[in-house]
Image 1 (tube, helix red, strand yellow):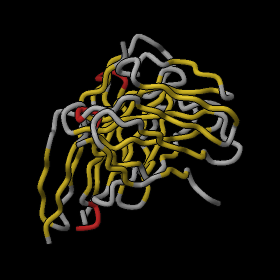
Image 2 (cartoon, helix red, strand yellow):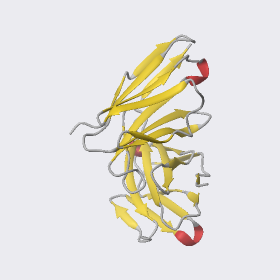
Image 3 (cartoon, one colour):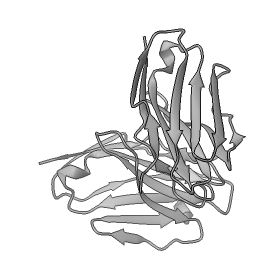
Length: 115
Length: 112
C-alpha cells in the first residue's frame, strides 16, 4: 500500500513567490495533518482536517498560510507571499478516526527553501 | 495545555550499550494517548508505539521497550544493545483529542 505522498520533495523559491505544497493521504484515512519542522521550533502542528473539514488551524502562523482539502484524497498548503523564515520541512500526516486514538502516518516531507 | 518534555537533547552511546530516552508529559485530561516516533537521518518520521492512558503495562518489542508511569507522568523508551542503525532523533508525543503535540526530540548517536 502506498503511504502518504507529498510533492514536491524539495522546493526552492524566491521571497514573495507563491508556494503550494501537496499531500495525498493514505486511502481510507479520514484525518489529515500539516506540520512544520524547523531547528528552532521543532515539530509544529499547523492545521488538521477531519473528513475534509478544517478542525483546528490555530497553528497556522499567519494569514499568508492557507490550507485546503477539497476531497478525501488531496490537500494543499499554500504560502503567499513566501518569506525566508518560512524555510522548513513541511510534513503531511494522515490517520484513521483521528490521531488521538490512532497513530499518524507521515509523508516524506517537503523541504522548502525561500531565498 | 498539553506539553511534552524531552530533557535530553542529545545522547551518544557506543554500540551494544543500553540507552533510555526520557519523556515527561503534562495534561489535564484523564484520557490521552502517548506516542514515540523515530526520525532517521533520511528525514521521514516512523511510528514506533502508541499507548493510551488506561494501559500502564510496559511493552517490549525486540530491543525496544517502553515504561509508562502515570504517577510520574513519564513514558520512557529504552533501547537494549543499541546498534548504529538506531541513530536517529526520537520524538515523544501526546494527544488528548485529534491533534498531537511533539516534544523537542532527543538525538541519539550510536557509535560503532
